[in-house]
Length: 150
Length: 104
Image: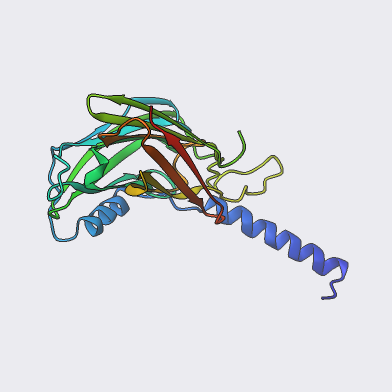
């Protein structure tokens, strides 16, 4: 490929501008997108409340590391257990945070980790039981300093 | 700790085993830029599997929103001294790793 100086300059600037705008116009997840994801996750069953408990701080000072815990009330026996728990965040660049897959050998359907939050937003936990029923819990977390870089 | 090293801490109480995992991993989201304005490419764990005596008991699907050096806690049923807890992981650059720990 032969490039003279002018061509090289225009191409380089073009590429860097594209990069700049690409990043600026990045889309954030919306509550609608999360509702859609929850709907496709739960399939035919209507998400109920109760049985699942999402534990979060009310105010997260550092959005880079927000402790979250989720626990589902289930006997975790061979014929009645939690198959999946999915965590969504509706104000982050990407709504999917983490998926916990459980088996009857998991003991308790309890797990915790730490996540990033870009801004104040709702975090949604959805649990699917082995019989297909779905339970959900939502917590609003106020974020002082966002944690997705930028 | 180098990238991908896992520390496993276990505690047995009341017939359950509490497992705390900590994976050393940058979990770069692909949203950050370095000082010269270039996007730092994403690099994060995508899957982790958890085994108890070679039986798969749980799996995790992670995304770039999980914090750096992910700390994950789960609870297992039962667990005897000398049981083996194993964790395997894979990230979005297809790097893999595993770590085992013995209860006791």
